[in-house]
Length: 599
Ligand SMILES: Nc1ncnc2c1ncn2[C@@H]1O[C@H](COP(=O)(O)OP(=O)(O)O)[C@@H](O)[C@H]1O
Ligand SMILES: [Mg+2]
Image 1 (cartoon, rainbow, N blue to C red):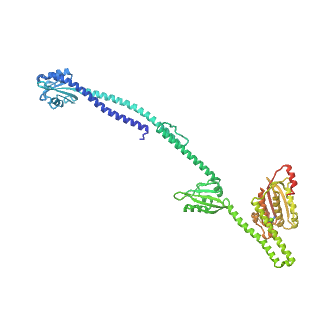
Image 2 (cartoon, rainbow, N blue to C red; image 1 turned 30 degrees about the vertical axis):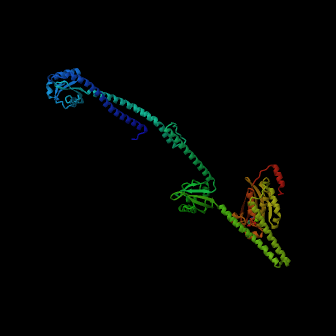
């Protein structure tokens, strides 16, 4: 059985009470008995002396009558004993039976009286079988009677002790009831703060805001204060941890790099938004494996290697979903026993690698482009040196070659400078509302001569008068000029070039369409790359640098627009430049129309 503090206290007080009562009972009954018996013995002595004085010198024959007479006076049993220890008179024995009474010489009180003058003893009488107190006195006067003995029943003593014990029992019963009540009350009072502490502690396990209300000055109060402090510290620590977790979570979620953490069993336990983005996973990744999520054996292998060798490693991997990407993965084992978890940081290096490749290609391309005209110029110069100068006709031809390639070099350098200016965003664009009609008419006029020379028809087609773009005039001229230049050069004799404009939503689409040979679809995606040409020889023949469309694309984007191309082989090509449209006040429109031809 489990006892609470109340039960224990109750049983403890009960046990204390029992011990006290037992001790008290033993002490009271023996002390009471002794004191009553002492008093009875004293009293009996006095009477015994009186009886002795009266019985001294009485002859044996008168002894029984004398004993009875004295017993009546002294109100006790009187026994008269001669020198041989024979009972010669006894108030409670018939005179005829005196001879049958045992010799009393050896009775302790008689022996004591004979030896010392008086004696006391108590025992159960052999004749009447209940405890008796005996007192004997030696008779010193001459005569047959040697000892006078008085006996009195001890039954009243036992009765008195019994009464006292009865009282004690009643008192004990009352005490038990009172003690039970008091101990119960005491236990209740003592354990109340403990119960409150227990309830508060139990509540704290669910809600750390709970506090104990025990404020007493004792141990319970101290325990309550300690508990409250514990809860305070715990909730502060939890709060701090939560704040740190939130902060770290926010940092992780806003990182561009993906962070992926796997547990010892290889499943993902943490993945930030960048990882989901990089791996094209939409749902929660926790609990799944990197292989399932990324569908990249390379990534899974790297993470496995790191977990197995417990050494950090990094590798570039290719992923196919959601788009082809090159990811640099740096993986580090996490501390721990057994197979460790791994934390992997994924950086998207697709663009970096693409730019690196582009730069390499660009340098190679530029060198290549420069080599041809330089070689031609050097060859012409050497030929002139070698004697061609003497022949004026030949000299003119060679000088013309030098001039043509010089012009090409010049064009190449100009285009490169343009491109680098645009890319470095050092091109200062003045974006302003420009009416589309004016802009188109302007470039048509600028290129009219070239068109005529190449025997192509250049004209402006449909264009809403109100169409207005936000653009830099010079950049716009350059964009449209480049497109017209291409159409003129690659369109071929008899080709028709039509410029047009239309409003598409918030944009104005400016188009340059030709009826030339068109461009095969496989070239279209790369057409706007630097140095990309459909037909390298043809481009060189017409003095192209391969940079025109790259410049067009960059300029269009710098003005907040974009450029697109559609083409059908044999039917012609259409370039469309989308630029944001500009809404403007009527006054501005008027001034804009005036300035349109003066870029
Ligand atoms: N209107 C067009 N019709 C046919 N091919 C074209 C047209 N415009 C451009 N191209 C092709 O696109 C290539 C890239 O043009 P561009 O960047 O202007 O370089 P470039 O004119 O210096 O060769 C040209 O070499 C040509 O093959
Ligand atoms: Mg061109």
